[in-house]
Length: 244
Image (tube, rainbow, N blue to C red; front, side):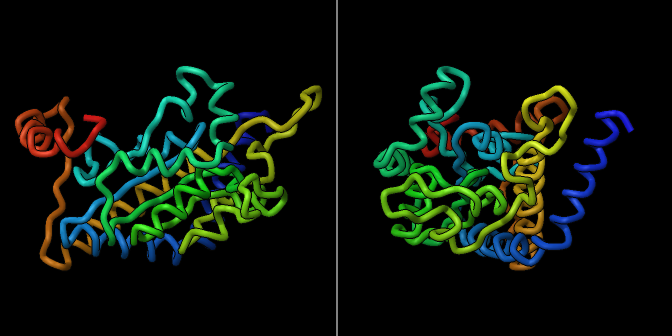
């Protein structure tokens, strides 16, 4: 097999492993979110570095929930200063300032995404969420998290402070494919698995909410017939969601 075929097979195997090992945990988090949506609650998702892609996946998109908000700050993303972001995500105290910018309340759901689960900001975000009464889940890479020490002063890792841990089933170091002549593995699966997990949680949560007699507000593609529908939601929530 060539590299493309091999990586496709790796991706399929990783997906199968997620299905075999993470389904109950995913269902638990979906249950939390379904309960939250049924009583007008909210979903928040946070990640640093490439993990912020999972946070953006939930936000303002076709088929997505209106009550879904990413926690974003350019200093821990990659589009302005990637080098600085690598070090900022290790900075104690950053998460408390960020979560204060969002109107979270007890019973909301927070999903913190960090492949390594070892840096201070994601760990402190999970702790801050739990202090405020949020249901807190983590999406991380167990193999990598278990292999490396925490960068948080407490010595704890994200897996130690989240209520439920979702393993993206990747390898230590994230990348899978070894090719002769390359100094390290290439081809990472953490983003694709994280994106799938967040979608699985959302669709199951909507089914739970519907079973409780509540149809959660959602966006419809603005490239079909969604403009008028979406505009009503945007006017309703523009003052509440800082990224609109």
